[in-house]
Length: 214
Image 1 (tube, rainbow, N blue to C red):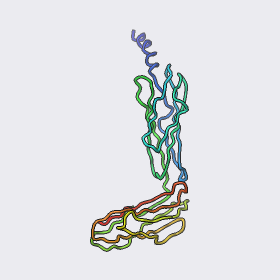
Image 2 (spheres, helix red, strand yellow):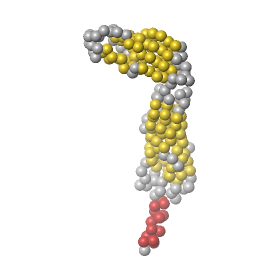
Image 3 (cartoon, one colour):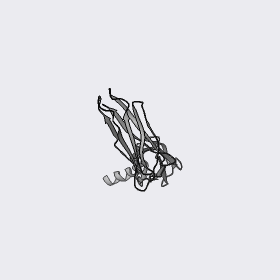
Image 4 (cartoon, rainbow, N blue to C red):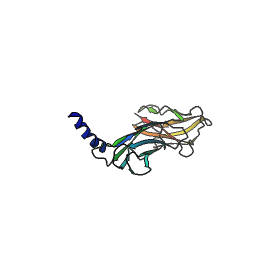
């Protein structure tokens, strides 16, 4: 009796099966010169009915999902191509794509795209601090190209007139020292040091340091 019941239920389970995925997670090690990377998520319709992908929703605008088509017959395979625009991002990035189908009773699939983006620039220190009522002395902010890269500083400025900055010294393409000082220290003040580089040419890297009188 139990065996007969199981046999009767099997077609129903098959009909409600959805897409099966070869992989739901892709990891990519980007190159410093990359402006975009892409990963593939392959799937198969394991049910006995056609399945339509109704929506692919990315976790942010920097990630897009491309389908060859939307409807897949029983036994048919397909893939989603996920493209990630690097922009000015560095370090580990984690993005998701949620895939919704018309298969009854099926939960959306969540695809994960992880990208590790190397940072060709090393900056120190990330924060420059002066004391209220203290001396408005000069502090040095250093921009250093990591090994294998040639990077030039093309612009130095502060976000507010409460601070001034100038290029103090440079080892062309390698190390740049920027002198920063507050215009006064009689009250608390905050700002950013903004340093623009020429690398990569298609989307030059901008680095920052926080400036505080506190």
